[in-house]
Image (cartoon, one colour):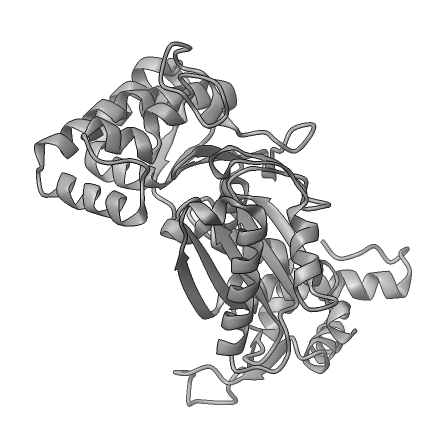
Length: 397
């Protein structure tokens, strides 16, 4: 919605620039006519807005490939190919993935660093992140540093400060991780940190498999399990911002020990460790071991197939609880759980039907994420772009 004429001219300009840049960032290159129609402004107003974004180096204007050769071709306005970029980081127990990402979601460079137990130390993790940010930034071939560094972590995070209250599977408690990174990165580099499942649903809701749906749950299964939730089109974060810690709901208090200190938590039944343990595989999980497990399951290995079937029931029960509580239109199963949906959809859906109330259980759709394992990473990029997208004039310093 275009800003009210009663607002100050500078505020109107900033607001409308943000609207134009947001459309281009989400939907790619658009003609001026398309942008004019979307914002319901005059052609002259749109011309001035595009001129501002061109001057800021945020967009470029080109004739699209394959355009009509008859008449005057329509130029399209798209993200500038040398415009600002952010660096997104996805920290998991077994690895750190880092990518330089431009406006529009274009991945400019990326790398994966396998990590071991030493990386569970916050200072070590911060060093890996800083080194990775430097490497992918150099790989872009650009002299400018990233606009912002966005970080996804498997824990409860204060979005304002980047303070991590607890990340059980990393064994982090009360860690000022945002401050650690800010101190170690080049001066004036902004840092934004969020929960991995929250960022995953953010990316999928913005431009992926949850786009156009107002009530969605993203259930992310890795070493741990968490849920990112959208209700009425908005993220559900809770009073302290810690909503969605479904992995630490207790299924059976006499069950296996969890990293959080309790017994029988959901993630001890449906996380990566649960799958490997049921198949008699060595623990703790590694990326290689999990990949091999699912390869074996697809090949018909009896122990792997049996583990998948065993885990399908508590997974369906967990989804049923989410359906009863939130009544989502879609539940996206990410990480390890995406493979589970491939291998055991009938068993999972049967368990959902058993545990969910009939009407919402019948209407919910179980799907895989559009971005595969990259949903948290791309969500971290969107978090990093948030300041620019709310006020494009910051690109001018």
